[in-house]
Image (cartoon, rainbow, N blue to C red):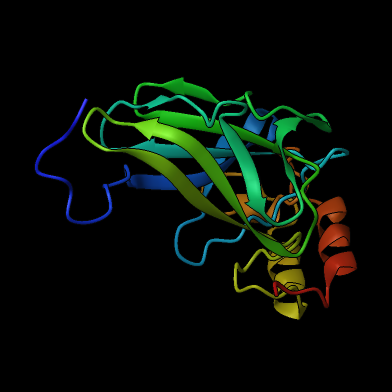
Length: 192
């Protein structure tokens, strides 16, 4: 098959309308951190350093993959998968929402996740989404310091909700001494 006239520039790739890191904080609920722009994931990924990246598009999409995997971490130290096991095909698609589990995520880094073969019915291509991870960076400024410790201490004992979930760095639904301890232990780290 031939296409005429030939395209004059690069083909359009579906553009995400939203990219978030989603975590469930015990019984307090599920909360998202916006990763577009300067968003920083500050919460713990647990024993196997697991996170979930949720990408939303304007229209329903399909993800065909690159012949071997549907997504992979193309910059940074992490893998698509969960519970410490890599699985580049563990991507799920529901309408306009693509969910990518990420595991073995190293702290204090900026990484890129590439979703291969995204098709919205008009545009097709590989979509690269950013993710910055810095445990304890409750202020989201790319550095863990006294302001993060103070902010977490101030919320200690409060119920976790949409206004303070960043201080629940252990993502257990409680803001308490364990969160303060994690932030203190991370003090002095920064994103590259």
